[in-house]
Length: 244
Image 1 (spheres, one colour):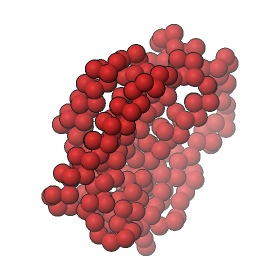
Image 2 (cartoon, one colour):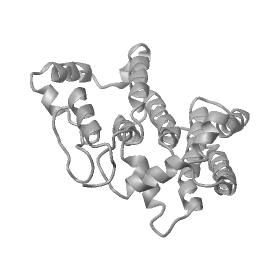
Image 3 (cartoon, helix red, strand yellow):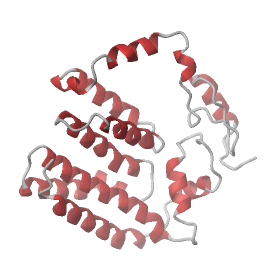
């Protein structure tokens, strides 16, 4: 991958972070942000309405005292990371200086994306990590080491702990690979192994999610097979994010 515009990517990300940092603290806490902070101060594998990552980030930003600047800096960092990754994607696809600058401006100033960088919320994590997963896939398609699949899985996994909707993005990536010649990126035989694994009688017992199936709050977690009705019922019975 060409590194001709690496400095440009860093500059675009730095400007984005600086502008958000200047603008974000000039209006008060949004009620959801206060909710995230409180939930994060009572760690759990998951809450009735969200995974644990954003509450932990929100609470972590307040370790040294209540600070709106520190809280919103986390969202600004995700916005900056998004701009950096988008510039790298453009150069990965062969774009030049103009294309990279144009893409950075679009990503930084598009209202719906800019909002994700102005306040703490579940979408701020995906703003950075979804494009990062796509960048790793592009590199694999261009001949990079297959070990980058581990990075793709790690990025999607962390993003899942921010917002569950990343599952739709992962499925879209998989379909895109399957329907194009880029499916050659997968190792030979990997599809057969995966299919065999999913067909095995014990495969359903291997999938567990402490985030999806956490029982209430605190440290009580059930590592049972994911069964939506039971998990939802358990969550409804433990509506509060405060430990018992």
